[in-house]
Amino acid sequence: MDRQNLTLLTDLYELTMMQGYFKNENANRTVIFDMFYRTNPMESGYAIMAGLEQVIDYIKNLRFEAEDIEYLRSLGIFRDDFLEYLKNFRFTGSIWSIPEGEVIFPREPIVKVMAPIMQAQLVETALLNIINHQSLIATKTSRVCYASRGDGVMEFGLRRAQGPDAGIYGARAAMIGGCIGTSNVLCGQLFDVPVKGTNAHSWVMSFPDELTAFRKYAEIYPDSCLLIADTYDSLKSGVPNAIKVFQELKDKGIHPKQYGVRFDSGDLAYLSKKARKMLDDAGFPDAIISASNDLDEFLIDSLKAQGAKITSWGVGTNLITSKDWPAFGGVYKLAAVQDENGTFIPKIKLSENSEKVTNPGNKKIYRIYDEEKKVKADLICLEEETFTEDSEILLFDPHEPWKKTRLKPGQFTLREIMIPVFKDGRCIYTSPSVMEMRDFCLKELDTLWDETRRLVNPHMIYVDLSQKLYDMKINLLNEMSVEGKTFD
Image (cartoon, rainbow, N blue to C red; front, top):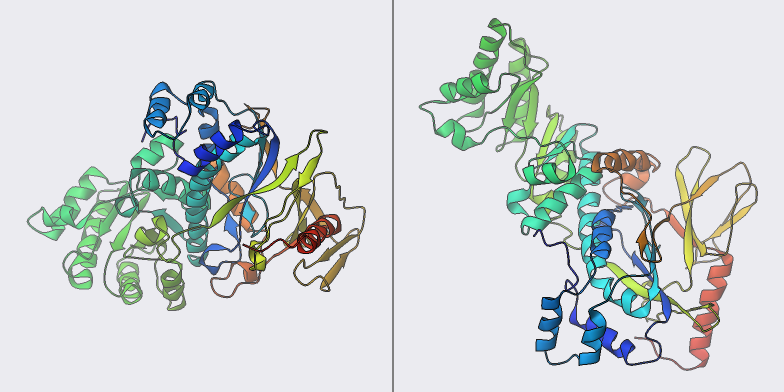
């Protein structure tokens, strides 16, 4: 878990291809690979970028140790000259990326790698592994937080995550996506994020009775007294005993900064309404009602629609595992190859499925906002192209190009959204803190209309191609057709 050198965190075919490149004259040819995804996870209207900081750590520590090389030698498929070359292997290329916390959309490059082909090929697997996982959890979290309608959401999923690393980095991604805290103490230590938690049913069960358990907890934590109320009988025992303890604190002149009850079972809408009335009638209108128990965005949305009085949510299994949508689906495809004159020759992947036909060339992305500062579209263009707010922009659907929108100066603003991360092997970017990424993410989510953020059948943001990129793509497709090349 704490090994920083993840060089062998790769698929075998990356290494066999590297050896193939090594044996050919194109071993050091510079290429461009794009990472992108084709479909928003959870049928959402967007996704959230996460995991870049871990990609940076991976690239910085990319090297083959002596034991790595000896293991590869033991496989019997790698030649001595190639293994000797690996001893001094380092990443010397350049990387651009959309920053963590940014809203992203299908088919646009979220990471661009420009490097000698052996290096660019090797980093594929780890890059996909890291960003696919964290972007998935960050996206799931943003949906859960949207459903909570401004209530605090806490990440409680460590015990259900698929292993320690998934628990740690999933919690990190959940914080970027909008959680106010995590139960994961190691995540809190590593990334300086708030850790939160109270007590379990076992605390209550370990005492002779529930009231004694509540009193003992309040003695130790008088300033943060959130009591789990459903160990025995939520409304006949749990809430009345909690009220007794709150009154005892009040009589002593103690008013906790945070206090209330938590339900982890039962009909959460019914229980929360009844508990709210009991607490209010007893003179505790500011007491929190917290809930957990296999929550997700759809259940929280339903509870809100039912008028549940819950204002704090603990979400575990369904968030940390993204249970209903377990994979992000990011891919990594060759987009261009540099020739002997330094010119990038565009490359395209064909497929009978139009969604799998790639966008060729060396590209960048402009995000276009309407007059209300909401995202209008993303425009993918070639690196040498420049668009400004002073000139008219013609947007068109690359799949149905007769659908056009003409934006005149004054009707839009724009900005490039990819940032340089590595230049010639040297990291030139410093990651913000996780809490800064969270703030950035919340700000960027606010640039989406609610129609795009709704949980079911959201409005999709257009991802368009510039005319020059579109023409390049069509020309390549036509050339492939003339040459009789088949689809894969």
